[in-house]
Amino acid sequence: MREPTELEKKQYARLQELTAIARQRYLDAGGDPRRCPSGRKGDDYMTDEEREESLELTRLIFGVRIVGDEVHCQGRSWKISTAPVQPVR
Image (cartoon, rainbow, N blue to C red; front, side):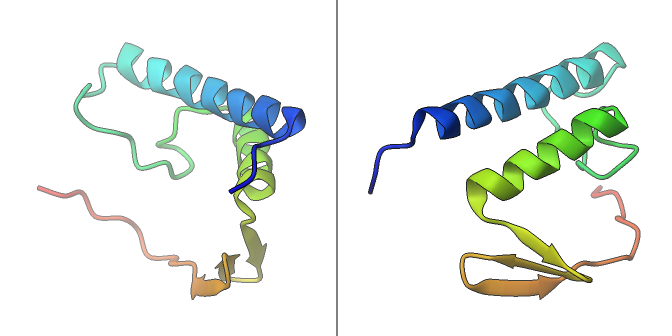
């Protein structure tokens, strides 16, 4: 396995920073510290700009591509669900 480049390290650090900011907002809003928000828009505690930046960084770092209604990653692909997520009880 190769060492990440300086750019990849910076991209990953920025992604971690965005995630930490969103996590803190979630906790400040009274979220359960033992649970994570779903990550879907409206439940990710990110601004639209942060969400776009986070998605772009994820695609760059992990090689994720979205084509139409399919996700492609590491030689695999799957359909994106449009069904609403039901809370786990």
